[in-house]
Image 1 (cartoon, rainbow, N blue to C red):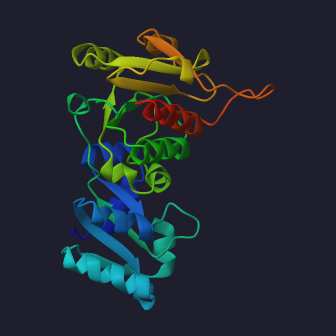
Image 2: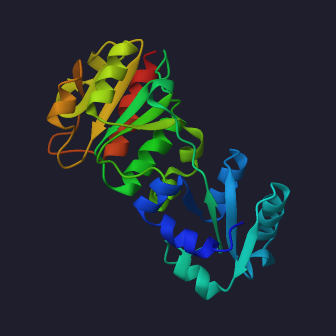
Length: 256
């Protein structure tokens, strides 16, 4: 473990730091447990000096030791300074979040790919990844302008899906080539789209969801073969992007 682990944690709270180092900070007992269970490589962990007093804390310390993860104890005050949350759970870890190449993420019958277009809110991106993983997607593609999947808030909202669902970043031209080369049909979620139950499910589907305010960008929507919508009750304007994605994906998978 590097002697400057605490400085490393601080640097990884910045997107530039995460990009430069290829590392991220996972915070909280469950997220660190999920990362260990998924076999994610760890650089080290920081725990409060009283973390091992609870049964779950002691068990996690044993698990970290079993995986040969170096652990540094600090005071609760220092941990609060390092943490991204207001009420930290006494543990955070520096790890290498898995990342795939775009060509490795290919939809299959019964396993679409979720394409996230410029969704900036970390909580929404995390919820989208969690939803995609839970519904059996083959992976996710994060287009430019989307929140970083290695962001601490994204990872907490994803509840471990960041470690298990293949994901890759991409720009517009890469998305177009990916869809063309793998014969992928793109659907763009839009309020004025065709209700999801009326569209025939393609064999290889990429579902594109966009920013809640602006929706899927026009240049991305032009790549899609269809626009798809969730029918809403009269007077309802929209759904949260993760909720909409979950409904559409569920309907697609139910029809398969």
